Image (cartoon, rainbow, N blue to C red; front, side):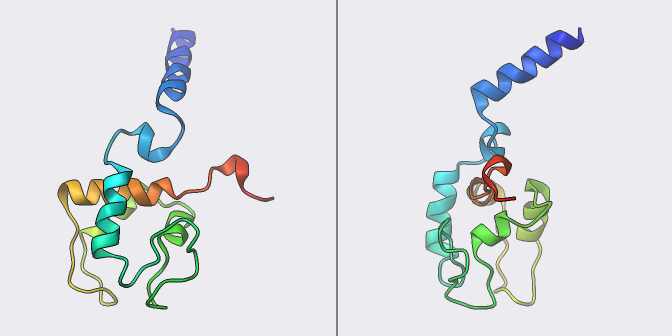
Length: 116
C-alpha cells in the first residue's frame, strides 16, 4: 500500500511539476501577473528580476515576498484579505486573489537553485 501511495505521489509530481502554484491547481499565474500590472505595479515591483526596485520604497517587491521564509498560499490569502495601514484600503478576494497568489508563488526560487 505504501509503495502505491509513493508511486502515485511521484507520478503527481511528474505530471503537475513541483512548482507551488501549479501543484495545487489554484489560480492562474498569468492572470495574476495581469492583475498585478493593473493594480499593484504603482507601488510594488512585480517582475521576478525587480527584487529591490519597487516604485514605492516602503512596498516590498513581489519577488522578495515570494522569497520570504515560510511564505505560503494561506499566509498570502490572509494578507490580501486584511487591510493594512501601509497599504491603500484594498482587499483582494476571490479569483483575483487566487490568481495573484499563484503569480507571487511562481516567483519563488526553487531550493535546488539557491546558492549555499
